Image (cartoon, rainbow, N blue to C red; front, side):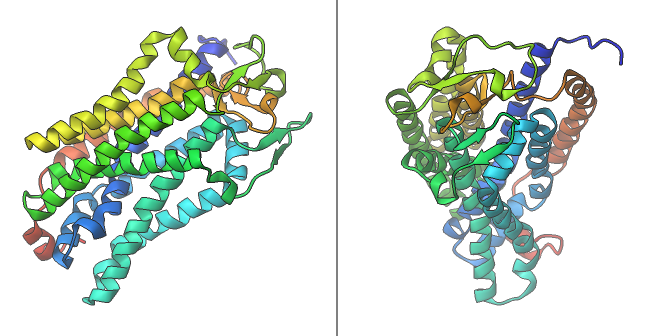
Length: 383
C-alpha cells in the first residue's frame, strides 16, 4: 500500500470530528421527527389534526433515519473497540430503542388503514412512544458515557460489562435523558412552526415549544452544575501517544470529578459550544414570542449543535470511559481502526457525503411548504 499522506493522529481526530458530524446530523434531521412524534397526541386533538401533524414529517422521516445507520456504521468501522463495548454492554437499551423505532414505520403505514377512532388513537400513542422513548434513551446513553460505563478489559482485550438495563438509569442520566427529550421536542416544535398551516395546531406546537425551550435551558444548566460539582469526570494518567497503537490497556486514565470542564479552560474557543447550547433555546423563545417561525427552527437547530458539541468537546480525547476500571477507558488515541482503514474510509466519505448532503437539500427544497388540514384529509398520497 502506498504511503498515507495523513499521519495517524490527524486521521484519528478527523474521524472523531466526523463522528460528531454524524451525531449532529442525526439530531438535526431525525431529531425533529422524534420531537414531532412525541408531540402528536398532545397537540392533535382530532383525527384531522393528527393526520396533519403526521404528514409534516411523512415525506422525510425514512430518509432522516439514514443518519442513525451512518452513525452506527462509522462507529463500527472507525472505532471498533467503542462499537464492541457499547453495542454489547448497552444491548438491552438499544433493543428498547429499536423496538420503539419499529413502531414508527408500522404506525405511519397502518394508522389510517381503518376508519376506527380507537384503532387510530392506539397507533397515535405508538407513534408517540416511537418518538419519546428513543429521545429519552439516547439522552440516558449520553449521560452514561459522561459518567462512565461499567465495563473493563482484561489483558487479552476481552470485554466484561458489569451492569444491567436498570443500572443505566441514575439521577444524572435521567437528567440528561430529559434534556434530550426537551431538546428534541423543541426541535419538533420548530419544525412544526414552519410546516403547519397557521391555526390552532400551529399555536399549540409553539406553546409546547416554549415550555421545551425553558426546560432545555434549565436542564442544560443543571447538567453543567452536576458535572462541575458532582462525582463525574476522567483524566488521562500520564501522556498519551496520539500516534501509538490502538490498545486501550496502553493508555491509563483516572477518575477525576469535575475534569470534564478542563478542556474549556485549556482551549477557551471551545466555550462556543455551551454558549450555543444556551443561545439556541433562547433564540427559539424569541422566535415563538415574536411570531418568527424560521427563528424557532434556527434556535432549536443551534441548541442541538451546541449541546451535542459540548459533550464531545468536554470529553476529548475520551470517547467511552469506564466507571469501574478507568484504565480500560476508550479514547481517540487508543480505540481507532488502523491508519489504512481510516484513510480509505475518509476517501469514500469525501466523495459520498457531499452527494448525500446535496440530495438531502434538494429533497427538502422540493417538499418545502406548509401542510394544511384540508390537504391531509383529501390528498390520497398522504398518510
